[in-house]
Image (cartoon, rainbow over all chains, first blue to last red):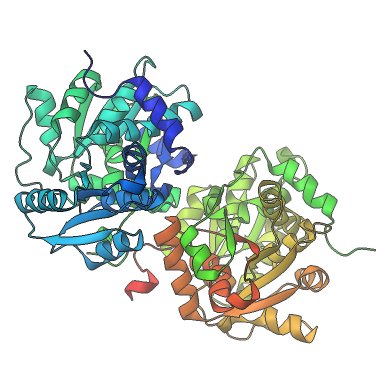
Length: 315
Length: 315
């Protein structure tokens, strides 16, 4: 029996979520091509609703819930892009969304979730308290827990980005995506099955649990991640890891200076606002150009939610 | 006899430059729609080659020059987006491009022009010395002067942005563009003739020579422009002014805080890097919402060339 979502699940997700999400454009840059010595294609999930690919997985999960009239809603813990995505997709169906966020999360993130109709519940800034608080809310309200990445429906939804990408640029040879919890990477690995496209995960040096897990074949703890790429500090999920082992070709890590350099290049050259996590794949191309010479490389720019008051090159 | 380029000239320009420029995408934002109380469509000329609509006019002028084998090249004075656009379009035809820039222009701008193959010649930072230096180079080399905006072929080229826009969003009711020298506004006014679309120019309060000229019917001097929108400090051209009088419905001015606010909103909500000049039309919508209530508004995001080290909200 296959583990996790199938190619058909990703295809069904694409149809299911299509009325609610953007078919995001693909951009190119001759200068960036010249810098890497390859043909780079950038799929702009920073232009996705809620500013990140996370809307895909959240919608795919929420749209499969039972009749909203009697449904008690959804709950998750997230201080990142899944929080806004779940709140928006729940609102679309008229469901309550309880979002557990650490008390030290920036006020702007809480406001953003509330703007999408989410109910923010604060907790202590530890994973243990996040999980405990989400569990308490689930028991009290009956709300269904939607994990940010370790969830088959979420993974199938995230895979739709790669599916769209291959439709628009059919002759890609490699797909590069960032890996944190592994929802996007696992979904991509499923989506491209049978397409003959290599899938490579990219990760900060300072949050390399996916690379260590991939290398050893055993799910490794995240330890204490230290990276500007806040979306990639999460620990790899076990469902995600199994799919990554089965369908991913390699995982490369990138230095912090490489991430900031790549982020700035995308802002300057593609004129796109991306968050640090989204810059990691280009950072990998720039730090490992020999791996990609002359190839047609697809990069998913995963999100664009960044605090414009504190840019990494101004600190 | 009609003055300036005709609708047919703009249509011919669109065909001529098509192999060299991007058909730029159109973006929308529900939040920005709600803020203005209208339906806003943003044409992303910040994603155009060289990062601004100026590539359209420069290509249209340069592609109409004689046989490059015997041509002495082109010359202009510009410290802005026309400089890079002319250098790139000249290089495409194998022509020399002499770009006169004031000695106090940022080094990054000179490097950018050189990267497109332009030959940078420094002059004193006065309009008189810019014109004198460009004239001297023209006499010495035989290079043809391509004015940044007061040039019929340049104007026809800039008009192609509106033509594309109306093809992609046919039922626009109003088109809003920034006005500095008037190339984009004049070209837009020509391009939309017969479409029943209102054209409104938008300009900083601190550089309102177009608004004053439009109101009085007499071309007014620019005075000493004081605005963050560096692309709009130039004085309105006389060819531009005649076309604007004939085809533009109104010119609105916007405060500096309104420009910065609009710029930041586009970065945050559309995830697009735009320069201050490109934010002026949205600033006009936010400062004059009663003018646009319930309408379908097209906004040309004119460019995205901005110094990421000095953002206006961090100063």
